[in-house]
Length: 164
Image 1 (cartoon, rainbow, N blue to C red):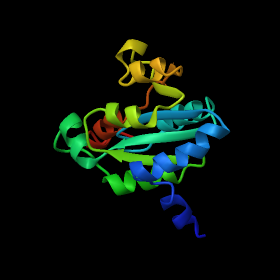
Image 2: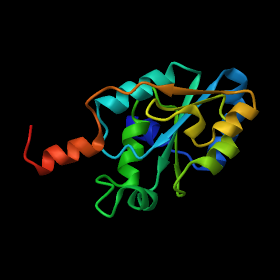
Image 3: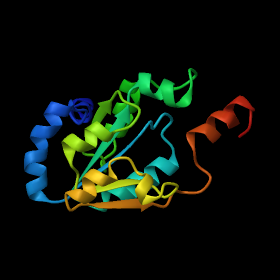
Image 4: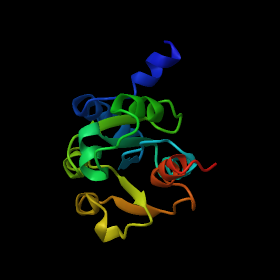
């Protein structure tokens, strides 16, 4: 299988993911996180690396272009959903990427019921979408410290201001 096919095979529909989860949950802990991941940067890599160490498989819920526009404004995303999904899927630490259209991944989390739910430590546990589902099912919710100085918004601002 070519590297491109191997990468694209990690981009799954919810139905495909649910089938894989039957085996994955028997093998170990399934970790879930989500985001826009518009311009992949060192902060994302650090965050996803920390998340991947919390379980056996890492699933990334990715906002579709439509939901990114609603959340971030009409000038976003910079990269379309297919490009963002391929970038995430190309990372060895990511086992699956699943797109979602809603503003939050609540319904996705309800269907997946991961063992571990992670989000950046800029959120309190009680603010993390889906924490009620995960905790009710015996899982854990873990805020992960973010790498200082890295954000897509700050990168875009640097580019617009001609900074290096």
